[in-house]
Length: 503
Image 1 (cartoon, one colour):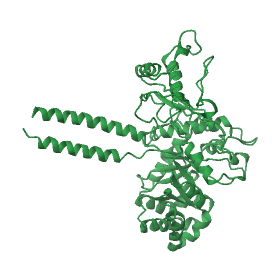
Image 2 (cartoon, one colour; image 1 turned 90 degrees about the horizontal axis):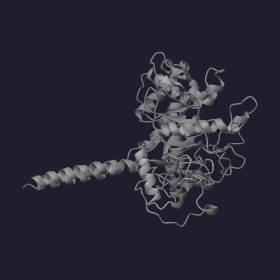
Image 3 (cartoon, helix red, strand yellow; image 1 turned 120 degrees about the vertical axis):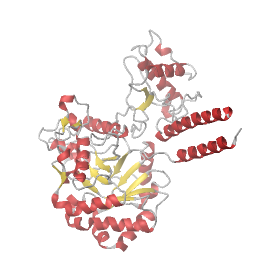
Image 4 (spheres, one colour; image 1 turned 135 degrees about the vertical axis):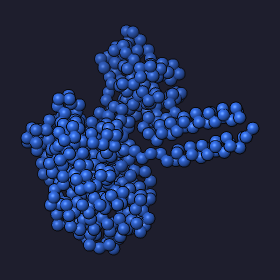
């Protein structure tokens, strides 16, 4: 009987398993832009605290403020810093100036502050055309400084472009970059491709809608579900588009392809919707801003991709964290933020099923609800567990009691899940129930059945110890990945042990 071969193979399998567990896949993200044109700008430590409370793991700064970078140190938050437009001329003409900037603003803070990207200016081609001719030089000099410090793989360099430089954007298959900019665009794309960086694109369906003279439907701009007869069809590819966001990204893909660049990923560096406007901005409303950003977050995190590249998710930065009350221009310019200067949400995003990222009710009004479309048998099993081993008092679900109606497993499970979630002090992983529940900021109360979204009185945690049904965190794709690998490993080990016994 040969024990050596199966034993060696088992050791190999466990070694492979260990490596796989270490290499969790990088995931799509939704981040935020942080502008500073506020009459009372919150202190950097307050900004960092708000980001952590909102589970925001990616931010883009419009500068490289030392105080902000220090406040973000040791938080794990991934940071994109920016070289302001007024500094591009100097950096684009001098390698040493670029190296000095990187030394002062990146190396002085890295790795304690998790700087992952440098934005060289913002909207340079449309707002600072005099600097366009040296823009690519500036990117190259900054990248060279990173290479010298062996950080070029950890920190990427790019520059945000306005989607307005993409002409004839619908149908997307006919899109192309403004030909007058080709002398900059072509070497820029060549740089991004050679350094494995990404194209940064500012996408604003609000402006596309406002400037369309009624041609673009409001629902199409807001990423609302559309009937098939309202979808836009690219007559060349027959691809169907249900929203402006996807159409603009595909237009960028096609525009790059027209210049023979087909493998550069896109990151949306700015997008959003204003929550307030003047008399000539009737669609800048709280409801529309909430609808757009809520739908956007779900769309991105669901990894839907675009019709041209389904399943290839587009990481996105929302514009913006705070309302900037010092911004010039129309009223809408000062009302793009998710929060006011005190950290109070401008509106409560509707994010059922999207986890805790930007569950931005700072009064702690979050709930645990059953997911739609899940297996009803799994839902019933989770409900039975909550009302049994989970020690939830489910008497309110009995006939004649306030939460009996509607008498269906979805409504009853939501009541039980939310009660358990509160009993556990809203602890991480306490709203999962084997994948059939998710945290939401939408209050599921109905009729006489009232749900609490707070943990005890005055925000204190309920002093109840309950068993846990879950061994994973509902918001961790990495944990799910590890679970799948472990399951495969267990099956492989079982098969190997079985074969060893038979030898």
